[in-house]
Length: 66
Length: 395
Image (cartoon, rainbow over all chains, first blue to last red; front, side, top):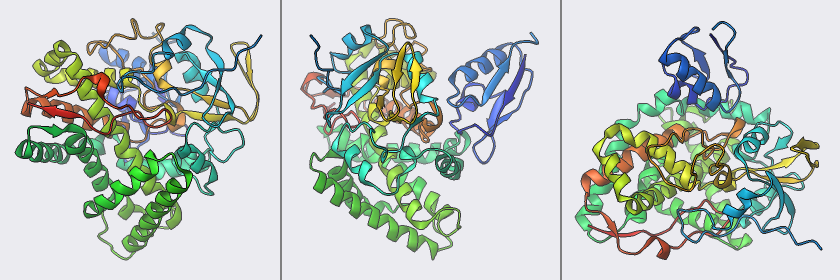
């Protein structure tokens, strides 16, 4: 599983940093950054939840790599 | 035979619960016609998935000046007249540029740094209240001043001027009279124009206003309008959530006990309160800029769209047994803060304030109770941020 984040569409709601703090953070401008590109276990579940909650579509979690 | 589409929004009977007629609307189609305050026909979105889809659709505009924008109150009418719009009434690209200027003050990290300050403000309000009571008015003495003080500090708006702010804001957001609202709005804007000008001359000017004034990134007029809008949005909603949250918890003593027994339980409880009370339907208004087809319905360009959280957040396909208040449920997917690019800028500040305020309240006053029943509280008119303006309590 790989995690991607697109700062161009990010609206800085911060839900990803709140939901999956080991995977995402906000930079000083409030925009999404990826801390862990290939999370596993609990962090993986949190990343999937962050993708569901993200209001802008900036957070994408790929499922192709297991 | 045809019947006229129902009026929307409708008045609440209990201030912390959606209007009873909304339960029936949820059983009907995902999109249906309603009649607004101004007598316009508009589309009402009754389901969660369609609500999220539409709130992300770039063909829906938030610009209050566009013909067809749904006018659900005197306050929206006043915004349709305004030459310049605040963030909530902007579309891209202007919206995104301005939102990004404000974001650094609202990140999870920056908001978290305010925890000690918010705790101090909460406890000082409770000190005052317990010195003078019982009885007390939990709205006037606690729910209102706490977020007001927090947002004043964040913006750099002087707390000494709170009597002016509170009076002018009350006249603006509570009035049914366009002239009175227009006058109050003009007074507030003039105040913030003065404050922005004054901040430009002081290198030590605090808060968001101090950070942006005179930088050339935003015009003085736009910054003044933004500060006014953030001051109102930043406390009106949170004050309503603290007071109604206290009501809902007092109505559900077993769940209140569960929160008091476990310090971590307040986080999901606040999400459930946000879902259950859904006070900000008036923020999710849009107008179509092109034809949009969804679920076999065509929303025509120029038609208004209402996307109330009080319907989407009680969609039984998403939230099991949605009319049951359950602090143990996973309510995190609610759209009480909206969805899409306009999702609440201050949501993480609001979460933290609610968590701190609703924890400290019962730590300090374990025997807190209402002196009237929830049904006797006066709900605000439909079209406003839902809430109460008085909450008589004792202990």
